Structure formats: structure tokens, C-alpha cells
Length: 503
Ligand code: PLP
Image 1 (cartoon, protein in one colour):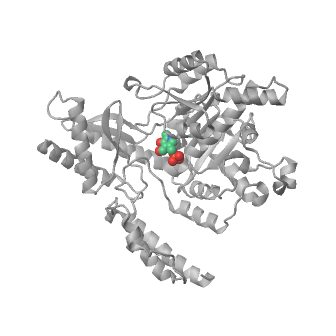
Image 2 (cartoon, rainbow, N blue to C red; image 1 turned 180 degrees about the vertical axis):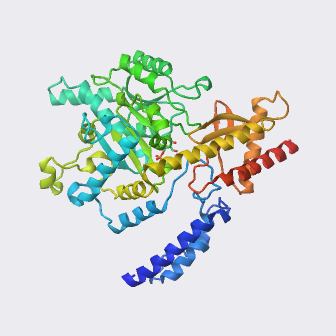
Image 3 (cartoon, rainbow, N blue to C red; image 1 turned 90 degrees about the vertical axis):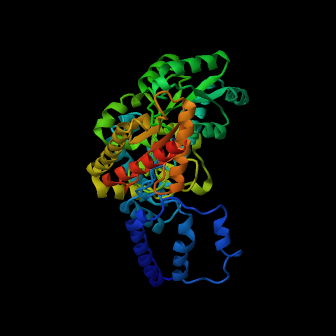
């Protein structure tokens, strides 16, 4: 493809993409294809000769589109969103145009410098404590990872190495020290709660440490409490194990619960004081709900105890108009990351790195090469402004509140299980009469949910919390508007009434 052919293909693709977005609502939100559908539509072998773009483009609609779930549709209310915006897409386009594996500052200084600057902007906009700024008092700072899972695996490795390094610092003999580290490694425990996303357990598997979950209870809104954490730490220590890391969640995946940050900080101040040997590294996983911190009504309250923690991350690609992938991770001490992840090879030697004046982000992450992700963040922030980003969050919170009010009005049919919080409402069917058992409610809600999925006009996800089967409603896809909420609710009412009639 030469530049003229690229121009034509790109303009034509752009037209199609805009039409796709403008008419996305007319498409069924979920595909109806059977597993293996695509193999039947594509040739057994790769083409020997190149094909014209026009033929390739036709196959987007004919072959790919039938297997696409339209995450950007206003009828997509499932899981958490994967946001998209035109400035975000332009950022991806430019990033692709500049393609390079910018592992060091020297690889493309703008890639590193823009990332540091926009992450400081975000830290300030989110009211994060100064320890997470690149210019802050603890030599911390931010870095962009692809996903929360990567961010958690990375900080857990940093926490593990920091803990072991400090625990064995007094041993001067190298062999003895290695033996002591190997012995202690087997005792290390990474903690989350039973409501923490599986990313923490997976990170423990990757880091080669044990994993334990603090139990959460319905009475506490499925949030981890200081009391629960204390019991778990004391029980583990009683068995000779060493908790060294904790994921505290702001906005759990099932119901968007916020762990009791004050309680957690207090218990750790007593059992594993920050800044001292044996401290427990606390990472705040705010994968989805973190974007709400752009609004003062959230950030003045929710960040209160963050200065007592070690790291924080949120996926801007979930709720802040940045296209996938973009997880911003902030650490209070960048040294903890680089001590664990720094690599030195002769081929990497350069004057800028040697000067100590630049950041080489390869040492802040698991992969070596890295994409120019900060460009899309920069485009989004500049296009919307912080005010526009706040409106985006507030509008979606208002949509969820409107939806929850409708659910409450039909208390003959429905009951709210959790929320609305961070624009998420979990609800279930109430069942016939006053005294329907939980089993009956679960059975009815499942049937109703399957009916909604089969109908295909809207797409929601479900979960099970405290034994309750609940449907999750999350109207944060970028194109959802107020006029969608009532028709969506009517579909749910229709499904509930039909399910009851058949019961
Ligand atoms: N943490 C929480 C609270 C989540 O809700 C999710 C996904 O929804 C994750 C972690 C995993 O995110 P990622 O796909 O970015 O690894």
C-alpha cells in the first residue's frame, strides 16, 4: 500500500467508522454467531497474493461485524465499560504512526516526558496525595500500564522484593542471604478480600507467593473492614506466615464496594507500621471507580487515606473516555519499582540514562518495549478539559440514579441488592408475594436475565453476591443518554412480568 492508496483507504475507513458510531444503536448489541463461525467464512490458507483494500474493507461488515459485541452501543450496560472517544481514537492513530518500542527516554524523549507530565496532571486532578507526583517528597510518580492486572502484578513483585530485601538486610554473607530469602519467600502472603478482583490472586501466582482473602459480609456492604483484615493478619502470623502485600479496592467488581480505607490504615499502623521493616504494601485497585476522582465530590472524601498507602491505579479506558488500553499506576517510591525490575544490558547503555536525569519507564513495568499511550490521554484531557471529564462522570451517575429510582418504583417486581454507586446498580426480582425465599428469587432473576439476553435489545451482566443472583446495570457506555434509560427499564419490566406469568 503506497501513501496515495493509504490516503484513500484511511479516508474510506474513517467514513465507515463514523457511520458505525452514528448508527451503532440500530445493531443488535450482542452477536448471535455460534463458536467457530469465522473459520467457516475465511479461507483455510493465507492468501498468496496481496488483495485490494476495497476487498478487505468489505469483509469488516461481512465477516467481522457478525462476531462483534458492540461495547460502544448505548444498549451495552454490562460489566464495566470500555470507553471510546474521537480524541482517544486520534491518539491511537498518532501513536500507531509513531510506532516504536520506547523502552528508554532516549528511544523518543517525547514518549517519556509526555507520560510523566499527563500523569502529574491526573494525580492533581484526582486529588491524589503529593507522594504520587513525580515531583513529590517521596520520589514517586506515575506510569501507564495496559491493564490493572499488569499494574497489580508489577507492584506485587516490587512489594515482594522490598520486603525480602529489608527482612534480610542485616545478613552480610551473600550465600546466607540468598538462603534466607528463599526460605522467607515460601512464607509470604499477598492479601485481598473475597470481593477483590481475581487480578490479585493471579498476580500472587505470577509472583510465586501465597494468596489469602479477607472475608467480606453483606452487613458491611461487601467491603473489607479493618477488623476483618486484623483477624486475617493475626491468623496468618500465628501460623508463621508473613503477609507483605494487600490490595484494597475502591469499587469492587460485583457491586462497587469501597474497602474501609481508614480501618485498613489504622490496623496496619498498628500491625505493620508504614515506613518500617515488615510493613505491608497497600495497593489501591480503583480499576473502574477511580475515574470518578476527577470530581471533587468524590476525591475530597475518597483519597483521604491514600497518603498512607504505597500505590494506586485506575483504568482510564474504563470510565474516562480514553480508548483501551490505559491503566494509570502511581507509586509513592519509584525506587521500589526500579529496584525490582531494573535491567542492565550493554546495548541499553546511553548517556541520558547514565546522567540520572531521565526516566526509563522500562524499569517501571513488566514488558520491555512500550507504546505511546500518553498521547491519547493528552488528547482526551485537552479536548474535554477537566470540566468536560467531570460532566461525563456526573451525567452517568445521574443516569444510574434515574434507573435506580425506576427500580424502586416497581418494588412489586424488583429489589435493589446494591447501589446505585459509581453508576452501578445491582438488582434482583422480588418474587411472588411478600415472603419469596432467596432460592425462588434467584431462580426467577436468572430466568428473567436469560430472557433479556435472548431478546438481545440490551445487554447486562450478572453476578452472585452473598448467595444472591443479581443483575448489574451500568449505563456508562459513552453513548448512553437519558432517553435510553426508560426504554431499557421497560424491557426489564416486560421480561420480569413474562417470567412471573410463566412461573
Ligand atoms: N480490578 C477491578 C476492581 C476490576 O473491576 C477489574 C475488571 O473489571 C480488574 C481489576 C481487571 O482489570 P484489567 O482488565 O484492567 O486487568
